[in-house]
Length: 77
Image 1 (tube, rainbow, N blue to C red):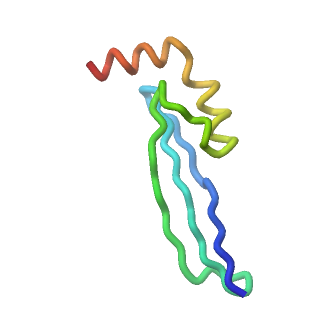
Image 2 (tube, one colour; image 1 turned 90 degrees about the vertical axis):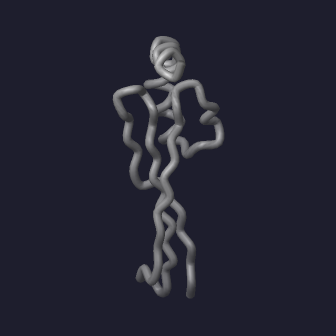
């Protein structure tokens, strides 16, 4: 039986408060991985993270304070 499993397997917070998220997509056959790939994306301070994995949402809620968002926006100017 083939099965596709998609999971967030790595969340890193970098110095400017951005959260780097790695998603692992594994194709499994009879319980053994036969193929897989990774995708990375960044959730920057001030971004809408409502559609993210629950763990990413929790980290962003804790890290993306008003001060961090303001500093990130100032850094982008």
